[in-house]
Length: 430
Image (cartoon, rainbow, N blue to C red):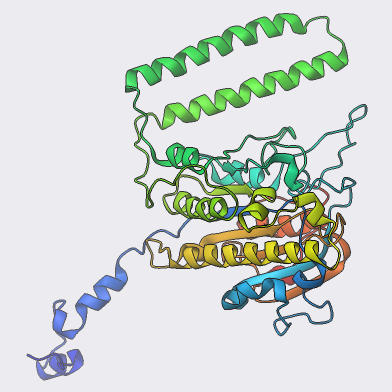
């Protein structure tokens, strides 16, 4: 019998309807393989990369008259040319309540009104990444991971400990050292299991005692003080949730690192490149599915040989400061292109790439020279089913949260509104 045997001919030649066994030589192996259960669909991931003082207006934004897929790539975005079909540039968006020209990150993912709470001059609301973390973070070791820079406020980010703000509008702390991030993700805890269990139990007992005392204090307080105490209670509840998560993962070893431990004292460009590697590693190992990175500005310029301060560069005019601003933009796009390369090269179990399942946004709440309109926005990755490869110009002052809402819904998260959103951006939906 040869590979060219035809099953129907055999049946006819036998003079009767005889069911043949599954023979490899007539393709049974292929059909059986096709009948096997396909691997589960890879999980969705979400990443936000935040700038401080924005970009160079003249060379970063595409011409508003050139929309769709056939726009001319401006000089500032040319390092991304090889990925042209896989990212979309959005113009026209802003956070309507923004009023502080030095805060490029504080309200970028929240769209909040800082004066929303009477008597307070600074309030915030939950950021888009933390909305996703509530949805995606139940089955991973870390519900989300926040990366930060040692630059602090000198890079135009504004108040906060990272890009992330929790459901109470409180800042979420981040890691500002790549070595610490690496060990947090991949290094085993050397403390014996029994000691770790005892430490968690001790934390629980302390929290129980504190809550008991706090509830006694609550009686007889004014309305304002009761509200403060409720915030305190909520903080304790958040700690309890973290302790419960720690208990669930006590006996589960961390993933093996797909990269070497970073070197110490990385700054600027080197820091960003390594943090991008750590983002890919964290997503690849499913240690978390939600990440943010509040990127450096001052140290980035220094690493590029620029002696000017990040704030002075943000007030650029034709000459040295504008050239420094353009160099910064080009470097960011070179690094972003490299990140996209690695996301595309990292394979999932089903043969698709990590890029196919990540939704990534790159931008700032400040556009250029401290302007708070037309927030620079690049979207990439296939995770949110967005229409990529285009230049999209939306009506002026479209809520930036409309873009975040579109991403969240595209990731399969059931949310009807986020921040000051007024609806999804239909032109972004694939």
